[in-house]
Every structure is written in structure tokens, then in C-alpha cells.
Image (cartoon, protein in one colour):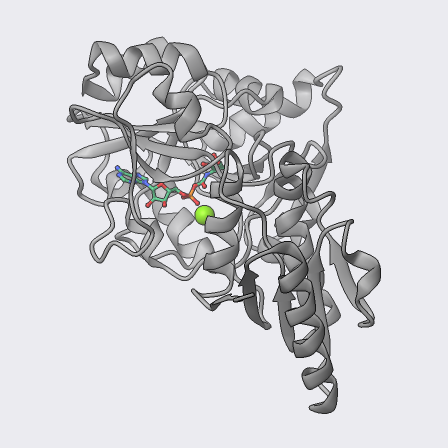
Length: 346
Ligand code: TXA
Ligand code: MG
């Protein structure tokens, strides 16, 4: 299959391009498109043959449910049989935006989308291209991140191309995504909200609207969000994340760098602007200033893919604290490292 890439300017969305993409979706084809978080691989949520293709193309386990993307909150009524007033208040506060709500499903939603669960995940993206596409298609769009399962989520059209060239007919290119990490997933079916996957919308922000919010432990044995159990977002190299006081972490990585040099390994170092110049290795990537978490989340996945391209054997990584967006950054870095985290003592 030939994969076509069509570039879209955000300022002047070309309706003929959106129409072609929407038309393909309605015909049961898959289309990759930008959202404000990461690129999605979309299919008409009412078309089961199209949904099957998503799982095939990504190599995604069928027990991992999909998010439905809508353009207006009113479209939720068709997908969910019950949304509590508190849940509604959260939606009104944060939609459109980088957050996904797990609600009780209605009978009309396909079992393939929900992986047989009694709930369904719904998200209303703020990205104009995503919204125009959903509107033009006239149906909810089921869309996981547009990567092959296990690879870092794509934050630009080139990354989608790397993973899916030849496997899908169309990629809409809207440039680099703003947030860079997948949406916050919050279960709003209970008495209090539970964050199943941290993201740009933080527990602190959610608590201002609905108190009692909790964050599901990443180590839960039976995660309520099935996607959390897979090793995810992973680069090919063995990655280790070092946690501790900033200076202690840098010292420790310098030590690991020296040891790895003796082994003749190709070393990748993931750090911040503040420490960048302290490392000797050739393949060093700074995610931005340690104090600029927006920049760090924006840059993380592209950095992991860059290390793959360079073919490094090991990655030694610094990380942020867990405040605000830091919770999501750490969550993704820990997963990329497959849980390989070292606490550096003083
Ligand atoms: O930012 C995003 O959310 C991106 C863009 C494309 O919208 N999408 C995305 O989809 O990250 P995906 O499929 O890569 O991740 C969806 C996550 C998975 O962890 C999945 O297990 C969880 O949402 N999920 C989906 N439906 C669920 C449900 N009914 N209950 C609990 N978790 C659910
Ligand atoms: Mg994904």
C-alpha cells in the first residue's frame, strides 16, 4: 500500500484535504492525524472491520481498549449511558483538551473498542485539525497513538511515517504536537475520580473541580487501564533512569558513562540544559531546562526515537520531580526504561 502524506497549515485548514481524509474514514480506511498530545491512528468507530485494522496495523493486543474522539460534548450521550454531574463538571472545565474520560458505555459502542469492558474512554481534542476531521467524518473516531505497539508515541508526521509507511493510506501532517505526551486518562464512573494515566491535566487541577482524586499506582497488578500493563514507549536501547538530588544524579551518570566507555558501548545520555555540558559522550540530548516541564514533555518522545536512530546501546537518563506535569513525565520515562530506575543516595 502506498502511504500519502498531506501537509496542513493550521491557520488556513484546506477543506479539500480534510474532506479527502473524512471520506477515507467513512469508507473504512485508516487515517493518521495530529492531536495536541500525540498523533492518532483513526478509524470510524462504528465500523468493526476498520477497528480490526487498527489492531492489525499496530500489532496491538486486542484486550487493550481504544479511545473515542468526539468534536462536541453532546456526542457523548450516544456513547455513554450515564455521566454524573461531577463528571460533567470536569468535562466542561477541561474539554476540549488533553484529557480522556472513562465513562459507563452505552450498548451502541462496539466490544472491539472497549475490549469487552463495561466502560468506554472518550476524548475531545483541542487540535483544530483533529476537530475538523471528526466533524467532517460525522462519526466518533476510534484512535490509539499512531505508533507500532511498544514504540514511543509519534509527535510528528515523520515518526508516524517511520512506523506505518506502507501500512496505511494517509497521514495528515500538522507539524509537531504541542503537549508531546498522551492525554490524562481519568475514570469518572465512581464516587471519586481515579487517574489511570497521568498527563498534561494534573491531579492538582482536577482536584479543584472534584475533590478526592486519586492516582492509580503504576505497579497495580491488575491495572484498570489495560494499556498500563504493557512495556510502552520504549526505545531499543537499555535505558536506566536515575532519581535523586540533581548534582548526585549527574555525578552518578558520569560514573556510569566512564564504565560504559570501558565496555565500548555506544552511550546515549538524556539530560537537561543545566547539565548538558558536563557529559563527554557524543550522543547527548537535552530535553530543555529542568524547570520547563512543558518543554521536557514536548521533547521526550522525539529524543527516544533519536537514540534509536543513532543506534545507542544504553541510555542513562536524568528525570524531573513529580510535581504537576512531572508526574506524567516520570511515568513515561519509567515505562520507557521498563521499570529500570536507580535511586541515587547522597
Ligand atoms: O492522547 C491520547 O490519548 C492519544 C491521542 C491519539 O488521542 N491516544 C492514545 O491512545 O494515547 P492509546 O490507545 O495509545 O492509549 C489509550 C489508553 C490505554 O492505556 C488504554 O488501556 C486506556 O486508554 N483505555 C481505553 N479505554 C479504556 C477503558 N474503557 N477503561 C480504562 N482504560 C481505557
Ligand atoms: Mg499508545
